Image (cartoon, rainbow, N blue to C red; front, side, top):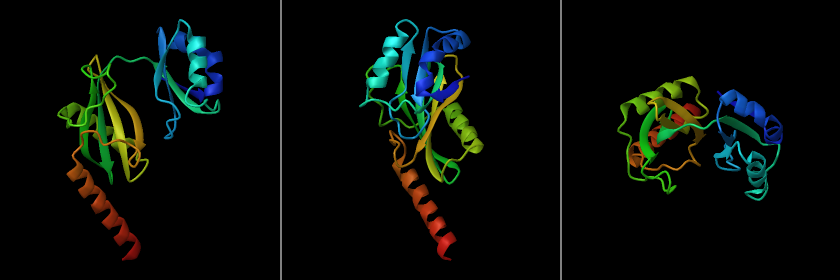
Length: 183
């Protein structure tokens, strides 16, 4: 459940968001790989003020930016999975309730949650934006898993992923692509 629209249409549609989601706050993020601003929450009370602060942030935002708006979710854990040549090769836990408030991601925790891994595999079968990319998955407080976003392999942090597995998979992909072109 989400809305997608230009940043320039958000303010005039704010009542629709709160009526649809039955919530006191929304989550907003850009719908592109450029991350012109990080995803953030905007509260119903003082929405206009907070939205205008957002517009002026990060050097001023382009109001034509396409954004995604959804209800705020109670997230317990966040994972980053690396997908190379249609295979999820590694996964790591980068955020949970113990480090959320500090905004300091973990860089040393492999994913040990098989349900999160299985969900990432399921998501990787739906859409492959590239031969190498990352999938961020979250576990909600109700135990449900959701995809947060897809990111570029080159621009996404590896967090605590298994670098040896990732490098081996990327090398194999490069060799395969080279052979497809030159042999």
